[in-house]
Length: 77
Image (cartoon, rainbow, N blue to C red; front, top):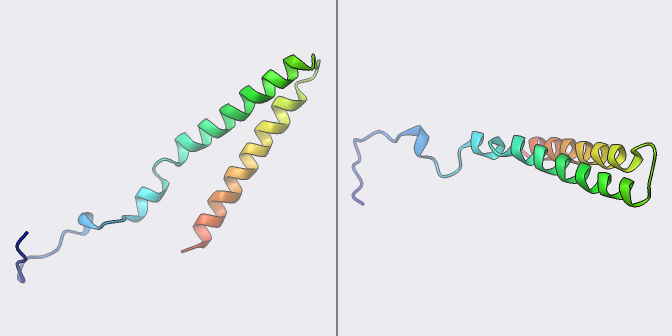
């Protein structure tokens, strides 16, 4: 590709725009929490728990893990 010295560079043509880091975050949160809830539900059925302890604890663990990852990645900048 030919370079033109008088031509302005388009800011959207960056190789790694900042907003792309967080575009998949919502789907990632939903996927991890849903996956842990499904595993917890399976464990609750397997051990015949009356109170869904595994489902609640694994879902909360997933939320805290995602928040930790988000805070850690936000502090890198």
